[in-house]
Image 1 (cartoon, rainbow, N blue to C red):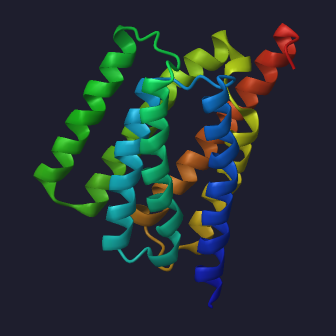
Image 2 (cartoon, rainbow, N blue to C red):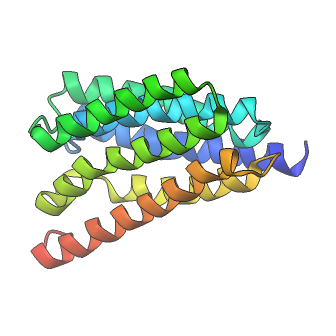
Amino acid sequence: MNQHAFLGVVAIALTLIAFVPYITSILRGTTRPHVISWVIWACATFAIAMAQFLDGGGAGAWPIAVSGVITGYVAILAYYKKGDSQINILDWFFLVVAMLGLALWWWQNNALYAVVILTLIDLCGFAPTFRKAWRKPHEENALFFSIMTVRNILAAMALEHYSVTTLLFPTLTALACGLLLFVLVWRRHMLHVI
């Protein structure tokens, strides 16, 4: 097993390590994910994995693809388990932008355009969760976002071909997860909820 494959497998393991307790906490009712964020993330993440595969990302795309499938499951759980369903006009805006971005990708039929558009869409998916993290930081799982930060760094390192198409998503997602983690910890401290 080469270094890329090893890092890809480690990143998949971290994906599972992050998601299993996160999903368990949803099932217990202690984590209430924002439905719109997870729908956006599921669509964008899986599509980006496909674009990475097309551009030769290899083992670095594996954890992104696994994450896309699991993220879809979290979106379904968020809906059925009555996650944070306070959806405002801005959340609907981000969802519409995400769907338009997917349509634009199919229209452009270009992996680089797809990754740029879908990464921006994925980052838009963070907006409702950032808003929720500010209001209710105790309803999000900080451990999940810390593991996902590391997972995205490893996914970037596992890539077999480095280009904007393959690197953009894991790099910016690692930064977004890290920033969300910071907001969660800071707000919990400010609200004495830790």
